[in-house]
Length: 145
Image (cartoon, rainbow, N blue to C red):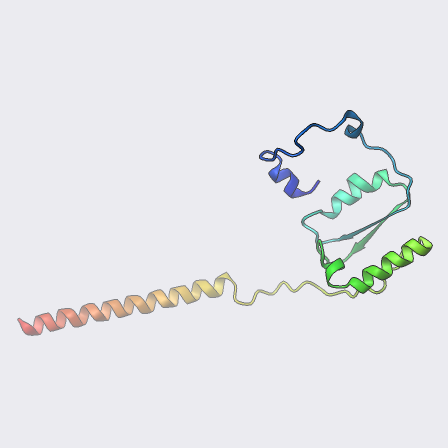
């Protein structure tokens, strides 16, 4: 499961019918397996692969790609994935050497602080304009009487 599964579990009606009893228990799978996971994957966090899946794959290998999320390791560097899978299928070896480490930029450009300051500046200007407009109206009224 993923965190989204936990969030949606109460409102979902899937599966429509209960699973057969045979599917209620986990079995060991001796198949040589390759798991690829980014350490920043919020959709299927690394902890699930490590604690819920890998223990049942005695011949499984987990490749953890640093600073990758759920799909970046597949979508942004497809040649590296092709190489990783091709080498694994041909020889059973793990070669993630073509993956380029691209740190996640956590800098915020125009974030909420910027917009809050801009909104405050607009509000101050509007208040000054309304105040000045009120002053002009009162002054004209005063001069007329």
